[in-house]
Image (cartoon, rainbow, N blue to C red; front, top):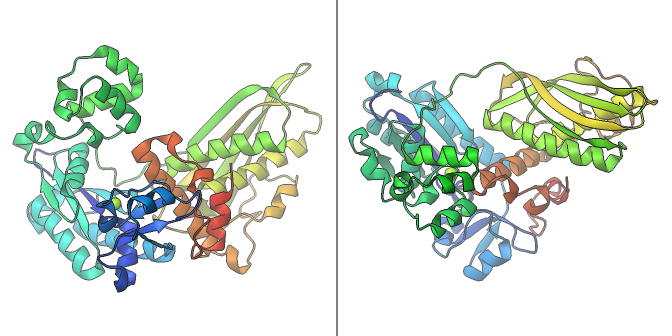
Length: 442
Ligand SMILES: [Mg+2]
């Protein structure tokens, strides 16, 4: 981290909605929402014309329609979102290799090493905005600052379609009057707790020495939020990825391995693991599960099963399916064990994931197979049938569901959304596969 405002946060404005307006000029200037209008439908993105009426992402479709009766619901052109977002990212990569993509439509850049080539950070930010506007046709806001947190706040303040540079000599003046909601990690619940204590601005939060409040917010959130409000953020732009693995486990009392239990636990674990992979812009080729058997007579013993395939995984549903197959394989190999007390998933053999590379679904007949899956490279691979291929609506839909949930969770916390509440079932132009996914409960 240098002394200048060399960290940029670039964030496309109302991304899905802007793409829809780009594709269909008749939608320009109109309040539109991407998502579903009916029961269970959720707004994934709203155009600025709709935001003016209070329509927001993650809002139920019916409520959005009530706020804005002229609201037009449009279907998701997932392939186009991917294509255009990737084009935007390649503009960013033209400025520096130090790009950390954190979602489909936003990224951090560290341009400290690019200043001698392209000019000061403000000039680089302006160039990015100009190129994305003229070459791709989308509005993008950019914040430039000395830290990631300040840059992210600056891009939010810059919206819509703006540029804000935070002068390192005047960071406190910039932060103090802003609402606490702009602090990374402050969702509606935390906001309400702060409001109850009369804390509305980041300045008030930074000045508060309320240790009771800190513990009320929870140790990890509290510490983080207070540090950020105090303008303490050492995080670097992580353009270069590390090797390793990502895993999660869940221990429970001794239980019968019913399909419901397995599906529920693995769904939960896969959600965490895949979410972390996506946050790191990583995907993994090897999936390993651990099953701990637990019996009164023999005590506990754990077995692992793993599968390596040429397709790297990072979507929740695909990971769940692979893990299920592996767990059933382990159970099939140990018919003498009646009960289990722990399940774990880990993903290794990590690769940098082109952000929107599509995944292939796992053939569902694999679940019935109790054969050995350990270390069989490329085994149990996807079938070659049309809709299951890379680039298929299913792959795109899985990715779209996951990235939408990631976005909602970043704003509102993990509990805000799961597969059940992401339903877009009411919208006819949403692909069939998307509807199935959205309606599937984990
Ligand atoms: Mg955005």
